[in-house]
Amino acid sequence: MININDTDIVKQARFHALKMEQDALKIILSSGKKGKSGKTATGKDSYIRQNQDMSLYADYTESGVLRSSAGRVTKEEIWDYLANFSGVIHNREFVVNGQLCTTGQIEKMGKDVLKEMKAVDNVLVLESGVYYGVTTNDGGTENAWGMNTDGLGRIHISRSESNYAYDHGITLKELGQWSEFFRCFTNRGDAAAAGIYLGFSESQVRDMMAKLGFQPGMCTIQADGVKNTFFYSNDGRLYPMYHYNGAYTGMTQGDNLFDYEPGEEFNYNGTIYTMDEEGHFNVPYGEDIFNCLSRPESKLAKKMRESKGNDVLSG
Image (cartoon, rainbow, N blue to C red; front, side, top):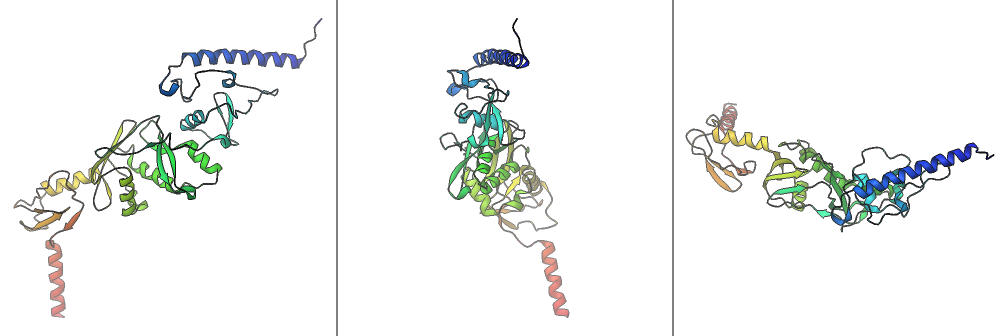
């Protein structure tokens, strides 16, 4: 008679479970559609090698714990997994393709995989599944850091990049500013966040817009198909389109005779505009109406000045 103890039963059960898991993974991996660069369309982990081997499958120790994935999971697989991961990493560990990984395995993204963000005709288009590079001096040396969209019209620091920086004691101060910049101008319809004026100086805004390839005027950032429009003025500020449209309507259709006399001249962005008899300014749509270089004294200001002058004389 053969004696089967509890240890044998446990081993047999684990072997049976592992065999079923391997068979299931073979079916899943063989059914995935191949994309560019040999990537599959099977979900979050898109970098699956075409030559499959046993290293793709879960490898358990005697205690039933996943073995370390050192040398088994590629850096690209880790990047892709973390780009779509919204949970919490406990004890610096996470699982990719059934393999146990640690944050110490995360490699820095290189410029060869980071696409430059550049607007064309004042339109910046950001796509899902693409890593975009932003060059900063974080860490003491100039380096490109990765950002990616979340599929909902927002772009943020790639999770792998932030974990790499944390593991190496690097504070992503400049990249954090870029993240805040995009938070203000993506997934917000036609409204640029008012907070942009609080966190960035005019020179910072000009520098950031220049790096992104934007020129003064109407600008659009489109992320994952979600568009956000705003107006970039020569005064170094960014305005939501509803702000621009409201001001433009008031100038061209409102009654401004209460404030100014017909025929008085205004210099907007280097062009002189004269108020007509109806109190309107015939300014073309798209003109930089926030960059007023000169304007006449208003009726109210003139009245207050004259009143003050009379008080001084009478005193």
